[in-house]
Length: 345
Length: 244
Image (cartoon, rainbow over all chains, first blue to last red; front, side, top):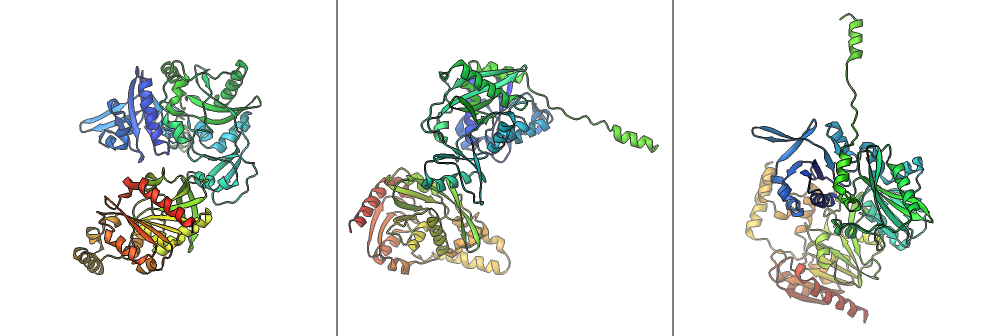
């Protein structure tokens, strides 16, 4: 199967995206893969598969590779004697800004390029954690209670310690801190505000059970991964989370009842249906007193959560065969024609 | 990393900083040199001196910190001081590299750690003096575009306020301030330093009463390879101040 992996982006998670792409090169080795790198200045490069190594990008070697531009239905490589079109389905693997905030989705939709990844509306609701809360309220999915802090505006936090501080619009654990008492609060807020003007404050629930579930819809049916219980120290900070992100071995299935699995799947489906079609997402849940709470939605999970799927390559193939089509309005000029003919011109 | 906004003379400075060992009770403030940033300093000292709370600061206009107005060294020091008040930091130990050494001196900590510090005026070689004179003549005739031919490597690519700041601070002489400093000073120097030569260090030791100079193989950035030894000496010097 032919697939273009689009990665990089002007995002705090740029480097994670590079490692995700390298991991997928290995996981989808039976595919006919193209690699398109978006650098931080929004230039696209066609990267030779043999050069898919982290240092290629840190050393800036990609700058010598062919540049690509977008045209209807394809990435285009211009050369002295014409141009080559790179058609085919794109896998949007840009984490964080650009990839998950709807920018890339809008760009690919505009140019009628088929892609695996969240659409614009789905991106909006998953990228900003405040909107995720609004979404959950609307579809009756429970979440942890929260308060919002805005930079430059003083407001008191009423949630009791220990609490967790998160930038509203960042994936992974960048800028996230756990605050045990007041003495730690100031620094935690400063750390969060480095990344976003809005912060979410939530109670930190010690020893909470965490479960991750990934899935996608194909042929109008939900397909779920195994449920993972991530091992955690207190919580995974950025380095711990991603230093082993290329983890390739199958993780162990969480040892939980069928009943809980069914509950998690039901919540997942409520989030997914009608919004996330075309993407493979991972939802991270908490379970508190038998109640399932949604913690966050990862519409482009690290390495596409490949380690949660028994046959990841087939899953991607299945998903790419049932991508939604964006409907484009037909312009017929009927209205103008009718006016013109009424005027007798 | 973190950001804190500081108001100073009707301007807002976003100061980027990072704290290591947040629960330790003794503070060491670490200031970088001109054109550098806290990342470099953290690379050297981040894993050392576990008993201290390390506070790494990007000086205004460097790294992640902003600066939209020309400053003098005393302004920079005042901004650092305001910032320290905000995060409740004490002047136990302040370490400054190069330009950061001058800022550390102005802040008058209990233990002043000067790593290849600036602050002693050195007569410029004739060649540089000629370049400056020539540039000034060009400027007079409105030929300021020739500026880029003569401008110092340190000053290239600087924003206007930072270029003005550069001109403000580059020729400062702190002989008097060194003489008036009456707490403990530790000096660490690279023997092959050309930016702030070893002769500066020798002069400072004659000015500061309680000062000790340690020299190392290496240039202006010798501390990158000698952080462990430097750290050990800072720790024992700090402990000695407690016994008095």
